[in-house]
Length: 189
Image: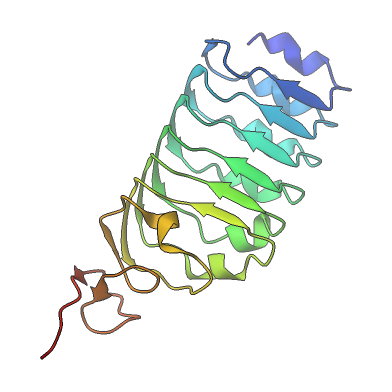
């Protein structure tokens, strides 16, 4: 993707899905201040997600799924208060899922972080995202208890280290234990 994309400041939608694009997203994309939808999914982009995406204050939909992005969840996304859809699935992202998502991305309806290498626990305040309709955290390295009731088991499928409702595995030390160890349900006859 050429750096000159940042000169197209009036763009509202960029959709370059499934084009076998390679390299990095140029930081100049942050100059597209009217952008409402950015879909770069199903390409071969790599490197870290540029922090300049956090400048896109009007962005409502961001699809960076099925690429080879690495690094951690960008803190600059904290500025994307209009964002409703965020799909970072099937990349090589790591680190913790940030707790600021509840405040910074309060309008999220869809959050897909599946098939990455996120670790640590599921932030307890994700359950406070009142607009959230889809949460997909499958196939990560998450551990500990699931601190929220509104989500279904399928949101966490393939994530071995989690326990507690809605999963069938109880947590050692009680449902809300911070120990992060799961044990299979057993019948106590």
